[in-house]
Length: 93
Image 1 (cartoon, rainbow, N blue to C red):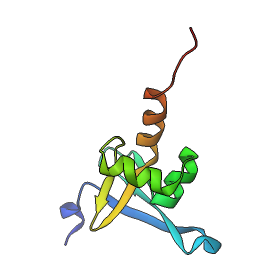
Image 2: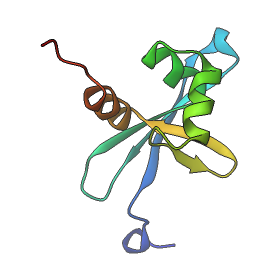
Image 3: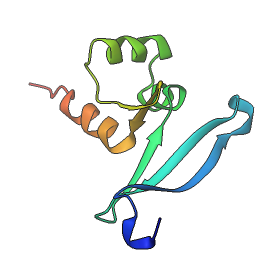
């Protein structure tokens, strides 16, 4: 594969987030537009949202939250999670 045949999204770096947390991994990718995408696994996304992992799996099954399938694994774009939080914000009266 030549440089000109590169896919629009490619992995830049894979770094361990927390070696004590069972080797969970954060994947950082770069889109064709140059935007950096940070993908979180279920454990990291649940920690980010301050919810249980089982709740997050339920939301994925119900399609209440945006997610990305990578093979059999579920990943979450951190910017999608931030938008999800914003769209579910309740304002006082």
